Image 1 (tube, rainbow, N blue to C red):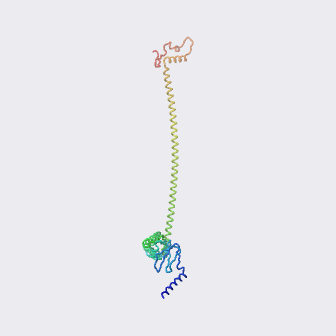
Image 2 (image 1 turned 180 degrees about the vertical axis):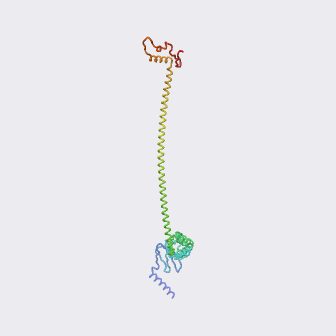
Image 3 (image 1 turned 90 degrees about the horizontal axis):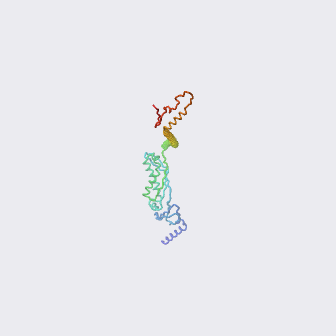
Length: 328
């Protein structure tokens, strides 16, 4: 009876192999690795993409080891002030490192991302809302919520599931009550108008500054041109003045030389005249003067004035020094 059971089992196995060959052959897709369970136990075998064989009693799971995006939707949370809002979608870009596949799956199962991404996102979003006001969540701190969620997820993954890498988190704008949303839109409209007015004022101020700088530059340019012109005119004046000074100096030198020459001539003439004033020369000149003024008279009576004064003894006598003396 036992031999019959063994034989029957062998026949069943052979029939299974003959009629179900695909139960032994399986494929692992690119970007994934294969993990295997046998009788509910995770095996330490990890297979790469491609064609592989397994026993019929072994089951296979494909685990993605390239970048993937998990989307968490409709996350409710209450703000610090008690306002209930909803985040429509949070996208988490993550990856499970290949060398940590066995450790991560053995601890958290094939749905590890539910624990460390989906459930964790709900928790972190609620933590963020409960510690901030609606103004902070919706306006003031919304630009930092992506980095806040990413850092929070990666911090816990690094501590408890180091094989999971959180690359980025994208959080959509939360849905808030309609009345509050309208108020925020009105505020945003007013803020936009203020920003536009401020920007216009800034543009006007910038244009005024530009015009002022242009005017200053133009004035500086004109001042520099005027300075250059004045320097040129001053240089010309100085050159003219120097030229006139040289001409005047030459004229003065010429006139001085002429005066000196005339003075020298007159001095020499005076010296020559003094040299001529000898008694003989004076006597000669006297005789010439008498001769030039002599008139001839005919008659019995001849004026005494025409007589030779030398004969009468009244002629002047010259002594040394050119002075004439008469008889007393």
